Length: 311
Image (tube, rainbow, N blue to C red; front, side, top):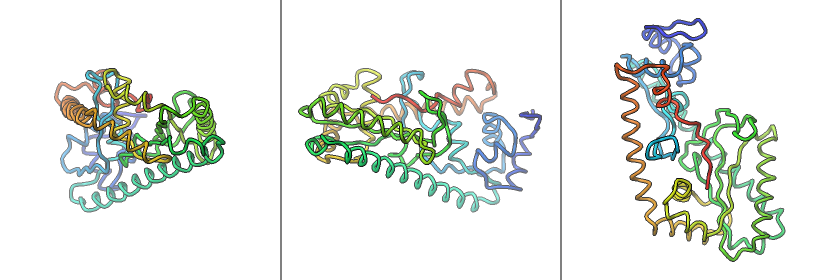
């Protein structure tokens, strides 16, 4: 049956027609031109012959309270299709591959720019912080999230706490300090980062979100027990995290602790489970018993917005 949105009717064959006329297109571009709902369009593209689809991104583990066993893959099926997938007619597969190559380059540039913005932001914070000189060899800044996977995007979205629109992926920053760093110095650092967070959020030239946490090495050791959902989130973040600023010695100590506690193997097992769940979800959504628009199927397609807290 044809799908409708805003009075527009498009047969599955019409998708191929749009791609022959205007392709290659990203999923978002095809959505706009077809007028179809995202799930129906994804099903149509996957089920139709004559369509070449190429994903310009990668999948990686996301921990989600709403998922049995907590493990799912990111990006969601919807995000992967709309933001990272290029489509075109099968006979123009070379053009699809070239558009996907350009999209990969764009994603890499967004990730690089966000990484550099994060580095500049924390450098500015520490430059203006009087206690920094006394603690700089005992504190490191770690960046995690989409940026570390080279998968940052700039699709506007609302920031959860304020509703302000921000430019895509947030900047997940973990600050780890040795246990002997004075509490008042860490408090001053926390307040300075919070001010920078607000500045980047509201300034029209940025509209970027920093999600950050300041913790000690003792807290890191506790969290690497990986025995609660918050501890699992923390362990995953420290496993994927990359050095951003500060003490490389502290960063290496964190990474050594991550390895010693077996976190990489635990993450790999969760990712394998998430990959199997993704295969099952896609098979269900494409199967004859799927109910496009039904709550269960929409849950498989959308999942929760990727704005999980950090710990």
